[in-house]
Each structure stands twice: as structure tokens, then as C-alpha cells.
Image (tube, rainbow, N blue to C red; front, top):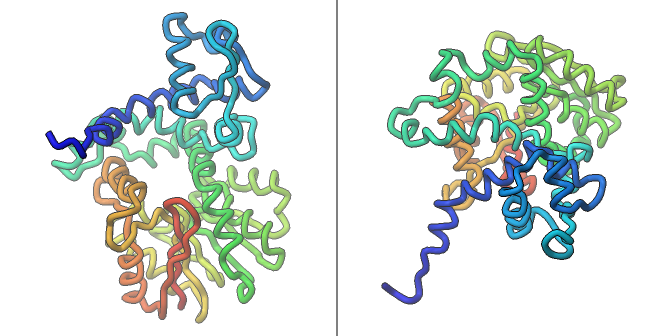
Length: 341
């Protein structure tokens, strides 16, 4: 074998479910929240989390070794604590908690991804629909507690993207925004908080509206942000200067994507903007690994649904009548794909 090549990269990826599941179990157990009150010994954590003594040190020290915990001292004298990142993003008491998406990954996606090979060979979803015959969204909307968990998961993972968009997009010539599929109203709240001249409205299915209204009140933005109901397949979009869809377009097949883009075009005034915030895949399909893997996740969840490149978005929007398009990077794998009427 050549001496200048190594199997390390292959093995790290192939066995990547080891550190992944270790992190997901730590989130499920509330380890990082337990450490929010300060450092703890292994014995204290074992008792607090209900760990078996055989597992305690391997579990905690594995998290140290992969950079998700800090430790001072060794053995029984060692004290474990959060890193700066886990304190900010994985302590449930933190305002920047994004562990909701990891909770959902642990409860649902981890097991569904075991059937990726089947999805690749059949093109069919591998989620709850295989057993119940009902789609993920149908099951969610019938279970208020699970729906709220899903909304929290989406809010956590979208927070940074929405904040970046609210800071980066030039709203100076606009006055109104309608967020279609707005869930908790998070995007509308970020835009209204950053731009006092903007009036924003978040639209989702009727079962979601009370959740959004509660979150908007909690943000103290009820005077400039409202929540409404819409079935974006059956209803026309409300008129607004800016129409946004955050992590919505990738949920659907090509015909549905084009239909939604067409509805946005018709609802906008001349000069208005349609914005899709997604993990936009680079046009060469070589670099945005997260976006490409997210597209595989859409295969597992919905079958025909897929993520897309900036060139795809541009082509669809120009076909719908938009005059020009641009891609606004938001940090990490996410971007805002913007079409101007």
C-alpha cells in the first residue's frame, strides 16, 4: 500500500455514528443542562443522570476527547464542565439553545437514516409513513406536544440564519414582510426587532397560529408582528413588500416548488423581493456537504423533496417572471436565495 495515503478519513466518516449518538444521548439525558450550574464530578453526574457505573467514565471522557466537555483533574477527583460552545448551545436554559434539532434527530432521524440504502434504491420516504401510512406533518399536527417540540427544533436550528438575514438584507426600501410557513414567528420577530419601520406577519396552518401568537407576545413585538393562518397550497399568498420562506421550499417536489414561487411572484409588488432561506447547495455541487446531506434527509422524510442550488433557484424564479436573483450567504451552510420582481 502507498505510504502517502491513510484510511483515517474513511474510518472517521464510516464510524461517525459513534460520536454522533454519544452527543445525541448526552442531549437526551440533559447532561449539558445539568452542567449549566457549574462543574460536577463523575459520581455526581452518574447519580443525576441515572448512569450505570460501567458507562460513566467512558461516556464523559469520550465527550471530553471529542471537544464537547472540559475536565479538570483525573479519575474520581476530576471535574467536568461545559465548553463555551456547549454552554451556549446545548444548555436548555440558554437563550441560544439549539439542542431541539438534536433531540428530534435522536428521537426520529437517527433510526430513519438506518434505511438510507432503501431510500436510495426506491426513492421512497423512510419515516413514520412506512408503518402508519401517514406523513410526518399529519402525525405532528395531531399531537400538540410533539408539534411544539418540532417547532422548538426548527427555531433552534434556524435562529442564527434568521438573525443573520435580518442583519444583512437591505430592508430600507421595504415596509412589510409576510413569512409563509413561519412556524413560531421567529423570522418575523428578528426582522421587526432589527428594523423598527417594518411590519411583519407570520403565516402557517391554523393549528400553529396560537404557538406563534404566544411567542410573539413573549418577544414584546405584538404591535408590529402578527400571526395569521394559511394553507399555502390552497390559499393565495398575502400581499407584502417582502415574502420569505424559511426552510420550506426544500420540503416539496419540483412542481410544488414552482407553484409556491409563482404564488410569491403574484403577491409581490414591482420591486418586491421573494426570499428562500435554505442550505443552498453550491452550483458545482462539491462543497456544501451539509446541503447535500440535507437533501438526502428530504429523500428519507418525503421521497420526492430535495434541496437545490442557487442556479436551480435562479432558473425557477426567472421562469416565474422575476427580473433578477442573488444569493446572500448567511454563515455556515445556509444562504438566502433572493428573487426581485
